[in-house]
Image 1 (cartoon, rainbow, N blue to C red):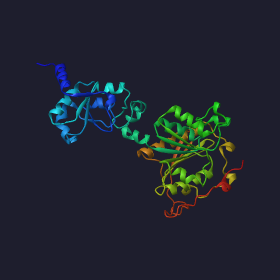
Image 2: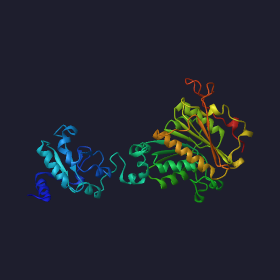
Image 3: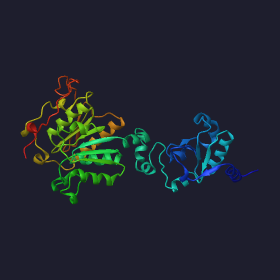
Image 4: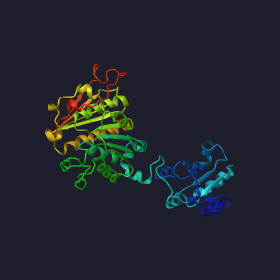
Length: 382
């Protein structure tokens, strides 16, 4: 009786073997004859899983054309040799086995990853996400192909940007025309003392890329204005309003009604913070809450009123969470709700917010608000 080794040796005498370097993924179909658990631990991009035990049964329905160029592989090259010989016997005319199997492929430095598209490194980095049924491999891939624009790289933008980058949001845009100042460092954790005087956008970029090189960071070293808001926001899937003034909040809200891009609003004042999600034409918008910008005397900035340094960390992190829920389409977001956080009492309050039928911004879908700058109306004097 022939041993398994004899069978493999006999099969190899009948078939052709190729090295990893000889495989052109654009011209062949890869057939992976390993077991599913092996396949899920890493695979060649585009490989079709047909375990060796069911190959003869399933190959006809999965590869109906017997002239299709096939490269068969397993872990080390033994099972694939037997599989290739069997396929030749079944009438497949262009079949080769990968010498050394998947291990040789990895050692040769050829691209591989999760069967759904994650690389081996990404599978390790995002392992805790992948284990969540609400996220999984498909959700992580969705995050990697998603984009978020952060309006502001200060107190709120810092934690939001850090957690979005860590989560693997593939493209993060940052709009800010300010430079890092020593007074920022009490709460703006994107920056450090070595970057005082550096543009906040560039400082943020360095921090995020050091955290996760998967992320593409796009810097917009400008102030958001009526002239650029619509064009900038339209390029992203979600906008996080991390500004610290009313003019920006009204501008972001109005521009979102033109672009259709949802906004995760956040604001802080001394020991209190607020978060809401505004989905254009579906939920309440910012103007449903605050119809008109307040006068300067009622709109102090953090520089004037002060803020506890940890507070933006809490609110910015919640903004990041809401953005991820929007991107993944999971959970209940803060649409039609205003979440209010009181740090002194350590209390969260959720207030229902109805879309106003007479809202000056979103009551008539065919007439979105005019995009204007609100500085003269409500920007505090410096």
